[in-house]
Image 1 (tube, rainbow, N blue to C red):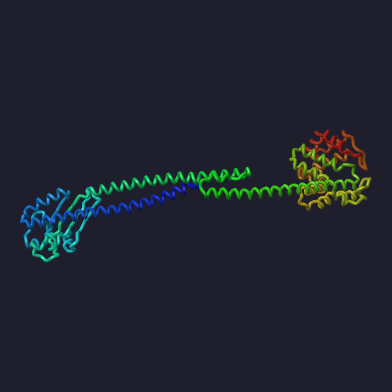
Image 2 (image 1 turned 90 degrees about the horizontal axis):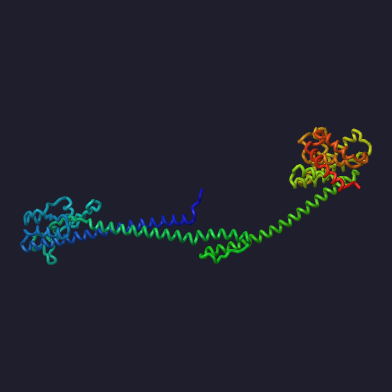
Length: 470
C-alpha cells in the first residue's frame, strides 16, 4: 500500500483543523450577527411604538383623536412598516368607547403582552419576505411629560393598550447574508493562502531537505566523505546531518575494522587450506613411498585428474578440489601389511580380498572430516576401484551411481599404472595403453571420460614427461 508523503499528511491535517475552526467561527459569527440583527429590529420596533404612544397621547391632549389615523399612516410610510394596530384595553374602551378601525380587539397573542406587561416579538426570517411582529404594551404612568393619568381614570401601571407592529426586515437579512458571504469568502481565501503557504513551506523546509539528506547521506557513505550540514536552512536538519556524519564515521571505522579482520581471516583460511593441501599431498607421497610406487605417481595422477575434470567442463573450484583430493586415493593402503602390499608375485584370492579392503580403510580414515578436500578424498578412496559395468569393488556399483570423482581417478590411476614400470611389470607402449583403454570403454571406465583421455592423449604424454619416473 502506497503511504502518503509528509506534505500530504501535513496539509490534510492542517486543512482539517483550519476548516473546522473556520466553520465554528462562521457559525459563531453568524449566530452573533443574527442576534445583533434581531436586537436592532426589536429596538426599531420599540422606537416606533414609543413614537406611536407619544403621538396618540398628544392627539388625545389636543383633542384631535379623529386625526390619529392619518398620523399612523404617516408613521407606516416613513418607517416602511407593513401594519400598525392599536389594541385598546377594556379600561380605555369603557372610558372612551370603541376606537377607530386601526384599533383592534384583544387576541390570544396580545393577551400575553397585557398579562406580562413585557414586549412580545415574533421574528420569521426564513420566509421569502422576512418580518418581525412586535406587541409592545402601553403602560399608564404619571412620570414625564406624558402623564397618562391626567386623561385616563386608571391606576398607575395599568396596561392601557398594546401597539402591534409588523415590519419587513428584508434589508437586515440581506445585510446579514452579505456580511456572512463576505466572511465566508474571506475565510476560504485565508484557508487557501494558509494551505498553499504550508504546502510550499513543507516542501521547502521538510520534503526537499529530507530527500536531499537521504541522497547526500547515501553518497557520503559510499564516498566516505562527510555531509555539508551548512546546506540545510533549519536547525533540526542541520543537527540530523551532523548525527549522520557521526554515524557514518562509526560505520566506516567499523567497516574498515571488519575488512581488516576479514582479510586476516581469509589469509588465515588460505594458510589453513594451503597447509591442508600440502599435508594431503605429503600423505599421498608417504603412501606412495611405502607402496614403492614409481616416482611422482601421486603428482601425475593429480595432474591427470585435473586435466580430465577441466576438459569435462567442471568449474575451476571443482577442478582444484579433485586435484587436491586425488593424492589420497590409495591412503587406505597404510592399513595393509607389507607382506601383501609389497609382494611381487600374484596375490592369492585371500590376499587380494585383504588388498581390496584398502578402499574401505581409506574411506573410514577420511569420512569423519567436514573439510571439502577430505570429504572428496573419502569418496575417491572408496570408489576409485569401482567399474562402469559394476564388476569393481568394494560395492560393485555401476554407471553413474559411481561418483564422478571416483570415475575420474579410476581412469587416471590405470593410465599411470600402465604407462610406468612396476615391480611386477614393465611399462606399456603408448599404442597398447590406448588400445587397452578403448577396450575398457563402457566396461571398466566411463565412456565419456575415455573419449576425453583419447582426444587429449598428447596432454597426458606431456604430463608424464614433465613428472617422470627418474
